[in-house]
Image 1: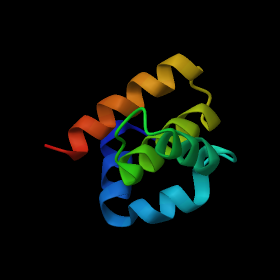
Image 2: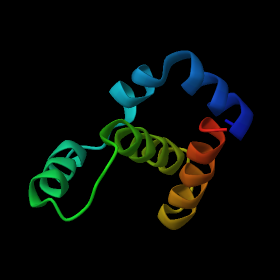
Image 3: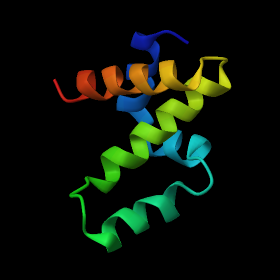
Image 4: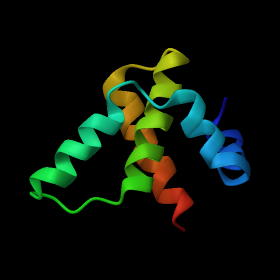
Length: 79
């Protein structure tokens, strides 16, 4: 799936993407960050980011590359 197709999918059904690809442990990790109070975090953006990254890894992209591409996609969603 290329970037433009993924952007269309997210804009059409972002919650569906999260439901399908949210990694196990992501909610617990988010809760730890929030409870520790060390960082401010947009919970929805975090869940979307880790879900996009997980989808990209599932399609064979390396972890560091999937995080970088997920960041680019998140930036495009906010434009």
